[in-house]
Amino acid sequence: MPRPIHATIHTEALRHNLGHARAAATDARVWAVVKANAYGHGIAHAFEGLRAADGFALLDLDEAQALRDLGWRGPILLLEGVFEQRDLELCSRLDLWHTVHCEQQIDMLSQHKTNVAQRVFLKMNSGMNRLGFAPHSYRSAWTRLSALPQVDEISLMAHFSDADGPKGIAQQMQVFQHFTQDLPGERSLSNSAAILRHCAAAEVRADWVRAGIALYGSAPDFPQHSAADWNLHPAMTLSTKIIGTQDLVAGDSVGYGSSFVAENPMTIGIAACGYADGYPRLCPTGTPILVDGLRTRTLGRVSMDMIGVDLTPLQLAGSPAGVGSEVTLWGRAAKGAVLAIDEVAHAAGTIGYELMCALTARVPVNAD
Ligand SMILES: *Cc1c(COP(=O)(O)O)cnc(C)c1O
Image (cartoon, rainbow, N blue to C red; front, side, top):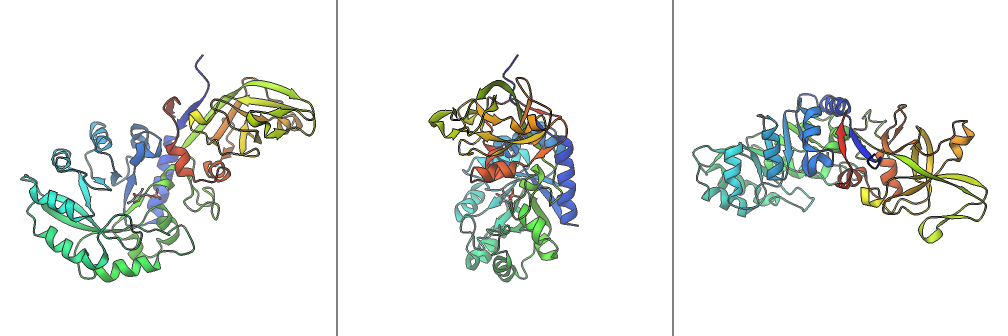
């Protein structure tokens, strides 16, 4: 038997979450963001659940190729645009739309030999200071682009730094509105946090929204809101089994560094999952975990391939667990109970995004 750890991608949850993002941004078209191997879910699995999207947005050219190979003929947007001149040939061949965020990319376009003009998304740096033209040079970039025979339609785009938090989006909206006034073209501004929190306003929804994390069933603003609060369903379950048990007496410790010491006699289980699977080593004793669908806690340090779990709550519930019992690291247990990936991420001091993306290659991923 193979090692029991595996990830399951829930196609129906992806469908549900996409429908939910669409409803939150009525009459906007939805880019399903599938960068980073669809946030660790796998491009092919994600595609299956997200076919109803209006387009797919990503960064890697080989992921764009993979989508075309899967039969997707609709829009694909490169969120960071091209990295070198010859990428434009692939854009022409695969009919990719691409972001233009710096002068060098306009230079490359001007050198590109093509008969078919390309659709571009011109990115403004409206305050995040990552990619994009400064607001005061945006219009001249637009003018330069629009004069190129290689360029077809120009859409306008920016990205919010604080859609998930107290600072909000007002200031960046104002900058974007001010410097794009009377420029023609479709607009795209909102990520998942803006879709869920700010898309009541038509100018925030604009023409296209870019939904990422919400599609995968994680809350962009945890712990203020949970995925359940937003009616999002987990799209990934990471599960394994108990492969050993130990009966401890008071004073016994668990794992490297003896960081957990039992105060009373107790039975613990050892689950086949560790940091080499992508489970964060930073998860401390007490991180929530499900055994046979019941909520309990991890014990001691996460090692490379294993983690200790407290079986006491199962004994108290009259359903003792042992070798072979199902362990849910995050997602949905066989009996239906859900452990939000955001809770586990929070225990490790990070966000759901990072955990999804950090699943390692040795974990088999299947769709249901
Ligand atoms: C990743 C990304 C998104 C999606 O962000 P989420 O927070 O996952 O919804 C949207 N826009 C751009 C430019 C991105 O890079």
